[in-house]
Amino acid sequence: MTAREIKFPFYAKASLLLIGLFVFISMLYIAQSIIVPIVFAVIIAIVLHPVVNFFVRLKIHRIIAIIITLLLTFIAVGAIGLLTFNQVSRFSETWPVLVDKFTLMLSEATTWVSRHFDINPWNVHQWIVKTKAELLSNSNAAIGQTLFVVGNALMVMLLVPVYVFVILYYHSLLIEFIHRLFGSGNQTQVSEIVNQTKTLIQRYLSGLIIEAVMIALMEIAALFILGIQYAILLGIIGALLNVIPYIGGLVAVALPMLIAFATKDSAWYALYVLVIYYIIQLIDNNLIVPLIVSSKVKINALFSIIVVFAGNALWGISGMFLSIPLLAIIKLIFDHIETLKPWGFLLGDAKPSASLLGIEPILKKIKKK
Image 1 (tube, rainbow, N blue to C red):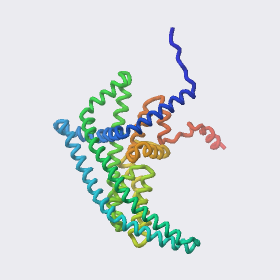
Image 2: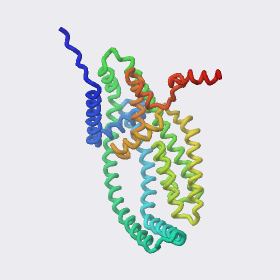
Image 3: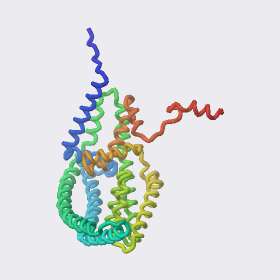
Image 4: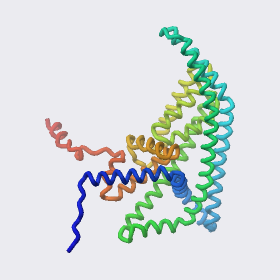
């Protein structure tokens, strides 16, 4: 006597799915201090793996090759970090001066508005004084918060290299584990997914690094030509924010425009910054991304924006940077599993043809007429 197959109604399946998603997301949020460094380490290890293999082909022992690769990475990241820290310290020293200039500009603007729109200027000036005091006090609190964030980041930076070293050393063991996990009948499909995932991450992130360097150099050069203060800091911040799709570019241009407003005598400089950043974005979108990044991450704009906000809500800034690569990996997996291919299609940016939409017969009739 064979056991009867138990069939659950749709609402029961949907409830179980939602409960499972809630538990899974809750686990990701609760264990973020453990999961985020591991995810970063896995991605960095995949990017650095070809470099390690290059040194191994030169007859260097694998452990020594991994150490050399990590040292070179540390030197590059450390140089950028020291340069950024120097710029941030200079910016924090002149923060009260910038606040004074902002409040002076606000005062002049409110005087003009009160004359033309019959608003009591005294109330507006009181609000400005209060806002200035809050800005100065909040800046001190922000420094403390920044130190706390930097402390946590340092802890992560100490953990990630250890994880990267272990992942690179046990690379073959981890790959073999993945193959055995999914059984002998799925080896071809598993190998294809693993190889494509590695290639996707390597090409995407390597191209992203090159893109960030080029964007930073263009923005720093443009700000130097315009004579905008903290050009190096603003250029680095702009390049990092450019990694976050759609949202990062808006924040990246707002910061130098505010600095231009506060430090320059003419408001035209802020407009110059806006125009130059727009030109840089055109170069980035039409030349750098297609030629250098050549991203296989075909995620449509809707889900790109949703996943960036979801990543920020789940893991903060780290989640924003990890959201697109992780979603790209998920889409790649969906595209290789028959039952999940519709979800992979939904995440992608491929537009359905007229025949799929069922409008091809209608178009033919219109042509005949």
